[in-house]
Amino acid sequence: MKRLVVTADDFGLSREVNEAVEQAHRDGILTAASLMVSAPAAADAIERARRIPSLRVGLHLVLVEAWPTLPPAQLPDLTDAKGLMRADMGRLGFDLAAKPAARRQLAAEITAQFEAYRATGLPLDHVNAHKHFHVHPLIAGAVLSIGSRYGMRALRVPREPRDLLRRAEPGARPRPALDIAPWSALLAVRARQAGLLIPDRTLGLAWSGAMTPARVAGLLRHLPDGLTELYTHPATAGGFPGEAPGYAYAAERDALVAAESVALAAGPDITRGGFSDFG
Image (cartoon, rainbow, N blue to C red; front, side, top):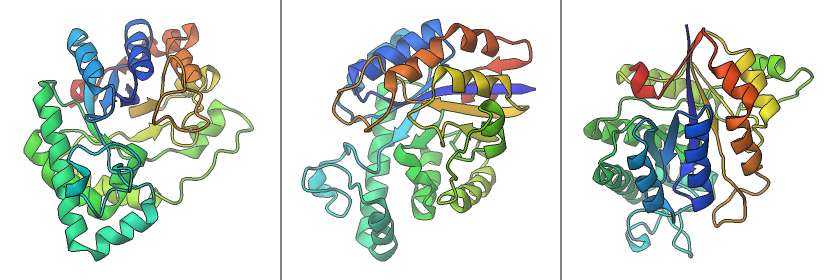
């Protein structure tokens, strides 16, 4: 049985992202979106989600490179001079291991984001993190512990089979994800022990920001059995604060509404939904 969750990250980052999420759900194959609760267009995203109850929404934890939920003054070890979450993930990971104060701040910020999500009144379909930072063992422990108090039932585990990418795009030389592979394997074990639903594979890692219509169609054409998450970064246009350099946002939106994608995802052997539809 092929079960497919098609997600959009960064819901709430900008109006352009929110517009694309709504389009891709109404007219395309998108089934879920991951909300940044303190991003500039979060209120607009929440309003749209309330209008579209069929769109499954989860929490996109922001622990790096974006806006915190708590005041930056309460997160001196986690934020930079601009009041954003630090971008130096390697050093930040070391500081979390070395500084008890940083770990306390981390727990407080994760809790604040879960609280902010609960205040929206939206059902919590899933949880993941910006830049997949929840694979860090200390962050994973905090997310698993705190999330259990807020009804977390599903968690992204970023593991992507490269042989599937090669079948989807013959001749492709996808970049390896060896930097997070061991931590993803550990996260999968811990998530299962916590009774969480996790995908068997997550597609979109190697081609993050470049999930073109041809690539999405290729992945759908070769979709394996089991639960697959295919995640994307759609927007109607670029040029908004917080955008990732070089990301083809509009192309990813186009991939989600392309006629070929819609036809393939509607195949008789594929069932689509959010994580909560498969839990």
